[in-house]
Image (cartoon, rainbow, N blue to C red; front, side):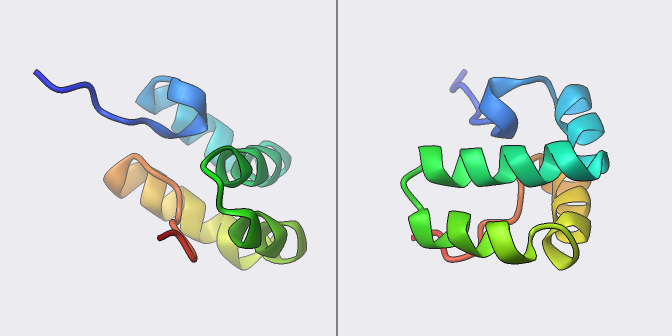
Length: 74
């Protein structure tokens, strides 16, 4: 069985959803996760826009697909 990649540093699905619902943790962890993956442009976009539109998208994607929005991910 292949290991699945989870967002928010390998935390469980429930913990990741809870952290995605809280605005400040979603914003900070979203920036750190994108920077860790090497997507610096996406991290910079999250600095300026992560507190509003991307926060709602993160919640939706975390509940539906167990990953945060992959904006500008290659």
